[in-house]
Length: 458
Image (tube, rainbow, N blue to C red; front, side, top):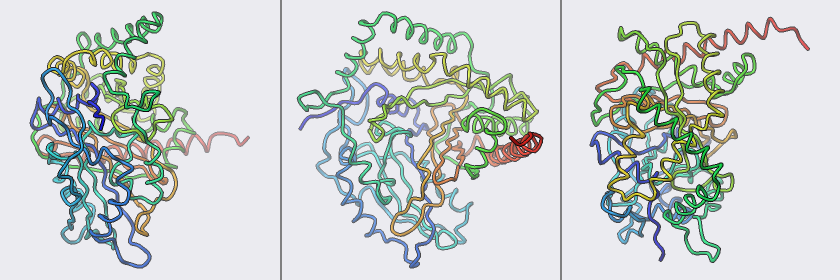
């Protein structure tokens, strides 16, 4: 059986963990379901049986890394786990009464405080019971070297009705003869492409230079958001209607992502002010960008790059702050910044892992950005599993060293959930930022309503 080595980007997430024992490079989600019509939630045996039926669509979920750590002259490879057992990756848990939002977030914060076992396939799934009102949840944890947050169908999502058909459409990159196209071969093709297209090379070099300037010359500001991490996490969430965000962007211009970034900016501003810390002239956010081809939407591994967006936390007025976010996001779209970070990783494919780790750490350093903000659009249709409708999907973004807050935003079936993943000790006031996000969305909706009321009907 052919083996496939990790790409430089996939290996980055292993290296970040190796550099700091408190950095956890897993992603995941808490999928909260309404009680089924018949009142019977699925059992552990139900979930395990269905997962056993569908896991063939995700063969990587039966594979482990060999070796489990990055170093030496070659990246680790995926190999079949000879001792694979679903029972080693699945378990059942229950919330303490009354099973409300606070109990759920407390449990989830602890769940995401522990790394996945690198000696096994890099994922976990928990069937969570005891949620108030008869609700239940599937909680997933998957190492970022295995999937990204944009293109993945993970072990939880594959349990949704119809998701097995979507996942089965994924195929790893292959040669024309059908053999696996390995990461090193893809890297060589990328390098050859740069050499064969000088105009493209110049453009990508300029983008890379812009990235280096931001890192070495114009560093991100120093704030209390960037401090040494502990191993434990706490979560805070805000849930809103997707239509509410659309109303704002329709009245004020821009995109749903602009509304998201403006709300997060307000939340971080509120947190700094509550700490008695004057907001700097802009925080810098790393915003992952999907560079996955449409034909590879269900692919495993990572197909992401990054934009570095200035969040105007110094601006008090909500409309002025929103306009500043819009202008920043619009100016970055044609800047080639995402190409710069992608180029750096393309070139890093040619370096041995022992040198690549230096590049990896530089791309996630506090000099480059203060906070990660990722916005993942999900399916806007009702989704079900075991006769229950999905009510909320709470996403998780990992924290790299010295980054105490990360914000993940996920929209699904008309609902949007903002989830702040925070260091438990460094951010005891996570609720302040969450409240600030909610307040900002209320303010923007009020402004949008006023604009709409003042606009003559067509």
